Amino acid sequence: MSILPKTDIVKINKNSIYVNEEPYFIKGICYHPVSKGNLKRSFSSIDRDLELMTEAGINTIRLYEPIDDVKILDKIADAGIKVIISFGYNQNGFYDIFTGTFLDYIAKYRRHKAILIWEFGNEYNYHPEWFENDIQNWYNALKNAVILAKREDPNHPVSTAHGDLPSIELVKLIPELDIWGLNVYRWDKPQSIFKQWKSLSSKPIYLSEAGADSYMSFTNSGFKKGKNQEAQAVANGNIIDAVFNHKDIVNGLCIFSFTDGWWKSGNPKEQDIGGWAPNTSGVPYDGTANEEFWGVVDIDRRKKLAFKVIKDKYTKFKFEK
Image (cartoon, rainbow, N blue to C red; front, side):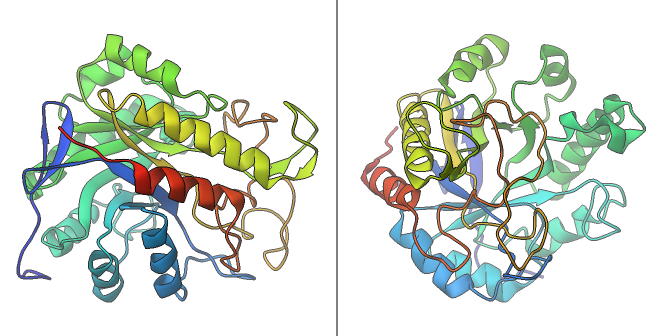
C-alpha cells in the first residue's frame, strides 16, 4: 500500500543523482535531535527545525536511524527536503540489517516522496569489535543487504557511509552499491579524497559526514581555546567550498550536524566537554571531537556562526548538468 499517491524516481546517471530526471545535488545536514536531558531521539522540534533548514537552503537530511512516523516524513517532504535513511546492523530488530527487518521499512515507505537514498551502516569499518573482530563479516552483510534492498525497491539508490576511503578490494566486493557515502575528517580540506577516489573507482560519491565542532581543546591555527564558533564557521565554509569546487566528482555533502547533542557525554542535562569518536585526529582545528558541540544551532535552536555560513553558501549555490 502506498503512503503517498506518487513517488519520486531517484536514479544515478553518469555519476550524478537525478530525481524525476532532474539533477540533484546534496546540500545536506546530519540530523539526530535529542532533547535536553534525554537520551533518545525526539521530533518535538521538527517544525522549527524544518523552518531553520529551509532558511539555510538545506535540501537533504541524513538520519542515523529510520523514521517510522509518516506524519514526520510528510512534514519533511512538504518542506521540500529529502532524507537519506540509514539502517543499523543490530538494533534489536528495529528495521535492522541483522534481522532483515530493514526490508519491511523499505516496503512500507519506498513510495514516500521524502526518500532519497537507502543507506547501510555508519563508518562500521572502524568497529570490527561489533562483528566478532572480523570486519569482513560486516562487508558480507552489507553486500547482502544492498542486493536485497535493490530487489525490493529499484527506484532509489543504495549507499553505505564508510569511514574515509575504502580499499579497492572492498569497492570491487560490492559493485551493487549505487553511490558511496564517505565520512571525511581531513581538517578543512576534504578535496584530497576526491582525487584518491577518482583513481579508485568510477562510482559516484557524496560526503556523508564532514564538518567541525565549536569547541577548541587548545589554542591552534589562530583560534582560541574554549567555545569557538568562529573556528567551526571557518572550517565548515572551507569544507563546503571544496565540495562545491569539485561538483564534477562529488554529489554534495551532509554537514555534521544540525543541533548540539547533550546526550553524548556526561550529564544529558548539561553541555559537557569531551566525548569520544573514532579516527578524529583530522577534526579541525584541534584534532579533537568535542562531541556535544557539533551543532550549527545549539540545543535551544539558537543559530551559531556556522549556520550563517552554511546558509550563505547553500542558498547561493546553483547546480546544473
